[in-house]
Image 1 (tube, helix red, strand yellow):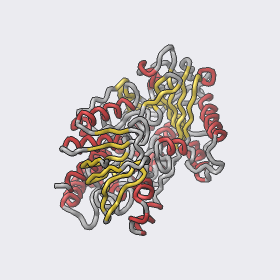
Image 2 (cartoon, rainbow, N blue to C red):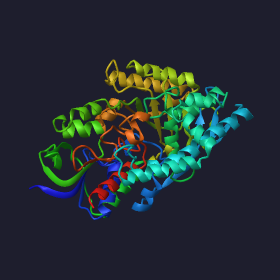
Image 3 (cartoon, one colour):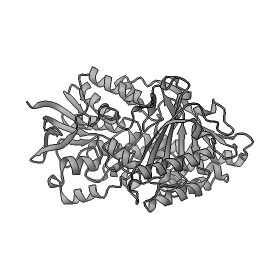
Image 4 (cartoon, one colour):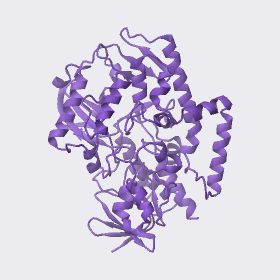
Length: 520
């Protein structure tokens, strides 16, 4: 028997759940179809060795205040506004909190560098605030505009004028620069520059000297949830706490959330959606479909090239969506001894990127299909802030490792995965010499593993690379940049849509609003 709904949402990641909730609030009959046994996508809390671990995403930055307010989403924070500590092999670390930076254990940061960092950080935040309204609505088309597009462009122009002539010129000057040049123009301390620059590159195919990395830094700063823009928070119970609550909000609104329900095909008739076919052959029909899957998987695998214009198909094929970011999760028998850090310090984000050259060398490996011998690392130990994650004295360590390519020249296998793990641990041993002795259980996820586990075409954390030609009114491509696709009734609501990745809920919110505006 065929089931019929007003809306089908493909994929139960956070954006899919947000989209479903908004549609259900508007009175629609909605079903969410999640391929895995648990909703949440890459924002789930998994289990490893009896300990709760943040499988992929490990800090919350930017669940949008409008999403929180509209849906009544209560994000429980175990530790808010956590600082960042840039690690040094001799224990002379740098500590970042907002626009403040200070040396630890005798590390010296000059007054000029402190002032320079404040200036850069302040500008990035001010320009991020300018960009925020553009992130919170569908990106306007530059031609063939509708009334909403025209109004959004007018508002953007007014805001640009309100920056003042000097700030407007500065924004236009730096927006497409690389983050390394911007920092080096204002700061001399190499350790400070390396840490601040790498913070613009996590989850992307960018290094500090890549053009446009200033724009990704601004995008990162647009997020604001609890505290200052761009600040990071440890969520109580892990990131899955957010998606579990979104699932409950959906079910309370009457949404039918089905897991283990993989969509094999979007059913198209006369260039319009009619429904979906599940892997088991079941057909579900609906007036419109929102896909939280990445654009490539949605358009080429589920829709199929035969239903698409050849130029559109070519653009989809040319999307840059191959991930360079791996994840290592560790269950520890005890806390490791980091040189020069107290247990309180372990509540921070710990960063390994001693200088720009370190990051660029790591990135160079990726260009040739190799994993970095010395990857840059972002480390959290959330169990220090949230005891609910582990018991019996155990702890969980979450490590983001940059750079490891989706398309590894040697191919991803148990052997190469072990090589990645060894590279990460060898780097970590320089700062916590006893780390091996503390490890009880480990999990290493290459970009290829992430792609397979989360049904993501290239294992990219943001579905589509965050660069200027794939952002704003270009995201993901021309012809699908306002959540609509060439197939009537089919919309994109995931991280591959505007404004992009991170756990914000904005693509899901905007897509739902777009659907509802077109159904009036």
